[in-house]
Amino acid sequence: MSDVITDASEGVGTIMLNRPDRRNALSDSMIQGVAAAMKQMEADPAVGAIVLTGAGNAFCSGGDVQGFHESGGEGGGSAVVDEAAVEAQRQAQEETVGRIYRCAKPVLASIPGAVAGAGIGLALAADLRIGSTRTVFATAFGGVGLAGDFGVAWLLHQLVGPALARELLFLNPRIRGEQCADLGLVNWIVAEDELETKTRELATKLASGSSHALSGMKQNLLRAPGEDLTASMHAEVPLHKATGLTNDHVNAVKAFVNKEASTFPVGWHAVAEEETTCR
Image 1 (cartoon, helix red, strand yellow):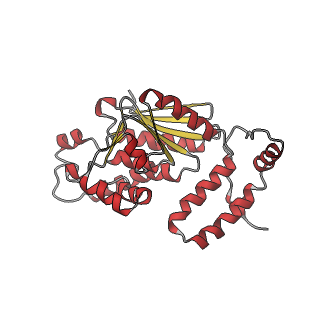
Image 2 (cartoon, rainbow, N blue to C red):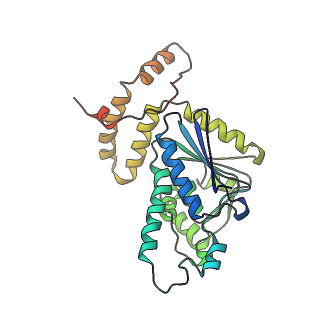
């Protein structure tokens, strides 16, 4: 069976990591599959939101430790760092975590159980996260003598702050259920038997929103960590004004005044750069 299963229906694209016997530990084919699926779904105008999840009782346990053992460690038994391997992993990380993080469309990670190591990078790169009472976060790198990869340190630093990021990486506590929400690792925790339904509800709501507005919001959010307030405010105005020219905005304002629910056309239409150019 494929290490990645994909589906697209009713405006929602789903990418499922599919190695349940290894708790969805990363394989080369899984990394390639996630990269290809993200690229395809981001380009598909029929997809308005993307769900990333794992088969069985885990989201992703990170690197395949059993595979490391069989090959003599993460470095394959070599005494020197393989420069080609470094470059290959940089590209793999960019095409998975990087693509998820920068995707113009909203990405929702649905976390049915354990998420560890590099799997945390996949989960935290998503815009939103929903877990169940079975969800467990563990950075895990220290336990196998590794520094960490797939953007986990940066993403933790951005999401939970420097002090907690250090605690989670250095001490590797297991964060379970509601504690994941309390620390900001997930947005919602629901009952185990409700996760699939709640995930679909959230994804459908995202997919039915204004694609112009959502893409503009995502651009503003992606810029924010590297800018001060003044620069961020200056940059957001052209996007705001561009969305104000769309039918999405005009029709939503009309619906609001008429006390009706706003509806937006099916299909993804991001705010193009040329639309934000002042004339």
